Image: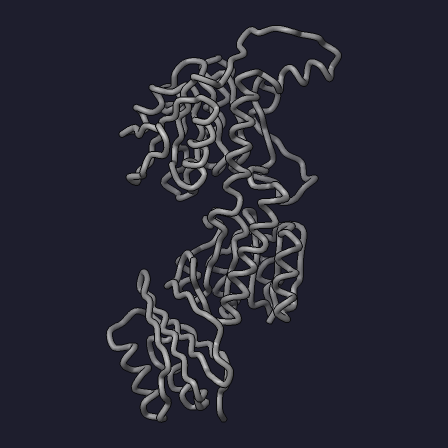
Length: 403
């Protein structure tokens, strides 16, 4: 078993996998499509962050790939449909860097409200410019959160603890925490608050969610933050609104196009504009978050390899499994969700006199996952017969297989 970890994934991930006897290769930067296809020869587990694109072509070129782990929250860099079709289980880390992103958002809100970045640049250039003009406390001011998921809701709680009044908008009906108030439309939110922080996913329909029209709806002299996905914001429109003064400041951590690795050159239309904080996609880049993410996703890899568990998969049926009993066999059968598959599996087992100790079935989006434990192991003929069923997309076996 071999794992390939790209993009400076925390060393704890490699330690978790190596502790299970898995060979691990690590690389610092991202790979393009052709480089990735070449690198995946002989690889069973692939770990990436946000820059490596796992396309249909990549997945079809390496159909034996067991799993892809996004060591991040987002999975839009992975073709999830193609991964399901090739029975490649995809995991992510939906919670591990939540606190880090929220703390960066809080820090940027305070810094923008006080123009700390501009004061800092002036002091470093030798200019003493002590003034209260344009500086405000965040206490008592209004914060609008677009997207009230794990990050948005925790930001809501921390902002309220600072004395901010919180409003949020989400396309899904979410429970408001604390005194946060829900807005029925994005327009209602934009017209109500003084600071906007965006925390939505990277689905294609969210492209340019913030454009000239939406920026025009915002209150004059508002602050704007995007720490989620780069393509959500029309940066040219944001630049024009910053230069006109309609937007008083911005904090941007993500960009439509980002360099592949540290040290590469970076250009943006937002460079050089006063009261604009630009950071290199570091929302989740704290030691604590990266350590947690490394352990979490590597743990999902380990559980898949050791037990067949797909719990918290983002693209295939979820089954949580414990350790296999000594002397037993476990059949891990991924298949197209068609009528009669379970009956066919059990018919094969019955034909060869195999007793079933435990069996679980889960389905999701056209695919099924049957996990069957057999205390006395299984004959190789059973494995061959189930693998040859028309609906089978992948069959893995743990434990004892008799000749």
